[in-house]
Image (tube, rainbow over all chains, first blue to last red; front, side, top):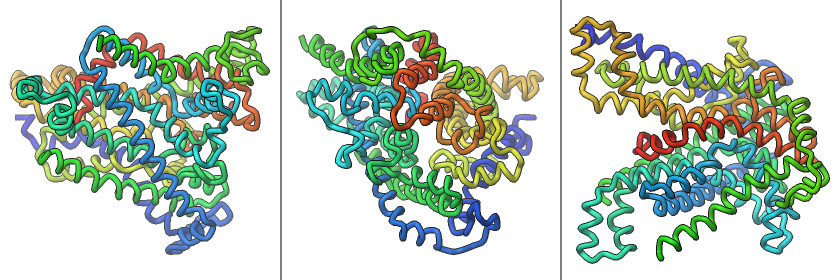
Length: 284
Length: 272
């Protein structure tokens, strides 16, 4: 029968495989080469130069700072996003008319581009803006080294929280009601129920959300471009921001090395995280 | 009593979280430059709606951006959905080692960030750099993985009996795909396209590297160029008018489809 013919499956997968190979896998492999190559706008020839790009970036004091900023940004963004989204999901778990209205409203920021979100909050958080006049202070949230990074990470988290909330609601609703009811019968309070029943069973959604938000935030660029441009000083100069600057100045090899650093960070974050969270899912 | 308290808290949270940001954009896009520079939340003392939006439409490159955004978003979504569904069918049903290996590589494409600089190099080598075709192909190649991954799980959870029965009845493969597979995968493809549309419509990073010249600029690029033109002191009224017009098409689609969007996302097609 036609459907059992093995070779006949290939044509169905082939277009997707070709596109992924040419436009994802090939650039990925090329990047490993470019990261360790001399390639600039001043000399078109691309030649192997080992760790020269990395050394230059370290000498210019760009690399260590960019890594620190990127990692901090990702952790802050992940923490804010998941705290807000999980709280909202717990409050809006039941599907009812009024909850749907709130879910719909909290989803709106997800539709706004990160770039536009950056401009909006830059306006709200301006020294003479609405936030300061409400708080009765005058603080340059995006201009002060102590708050700039937290604020850009917050804006990124704000943009995505509506979507993550829905993923958490899906996770919460997949928890069998009977388990919660028997916990109530056993006299478990609200907090115990959350800690002992809801939280462990929420692990798949939690795994997904923590991994997605962390990995996504390691590629931070848009919000920073719209708000600080990397400043004040270099306090929000994440890896992709430096990459764009190096690219703009014609240092394509260094730019590749920075892009490769993002990839390494993603691997270093995602692999243990997925492994650890998956393991806890089973034992938890 | 507890319910009242909960919804009061939610409302108090929603005001600064959703309402104030939107209000700031709308009301300031109606003000003349000097007044908008105060970034207040009050109603305009002088209204400048026609002037502001006229300038954005005229100088801000809005209409061209809108056309360019549609020109890339529609092909990307169509390609990802159909090529993704076809591949998911193959990955879900075939036991070929080669296809399983390809499926593993595909999984990596979801997790790892795309390498943007070699992509520029590659597109230049293929003479596809700077234009929408190169951008569409790149975005499709980088985004099709997630849809395949979600849809393959769906295919595997579904026994192949129906497909086999249709094949015995003489249906061609294409007919089986269109009549049985696509309807079966509809929920997951819908959720996939929602997330994809939001991603592609709002994409700035890829567009910045891959699309050159205002003839190709999508809406986020046009917003950035417009805002950066006067980076020292943003013309807030114009920037906000541009932000509003850039977001509006997506919000309009959302308002029409919100019931299905919310239901689709909360019914857990993304879960796990």
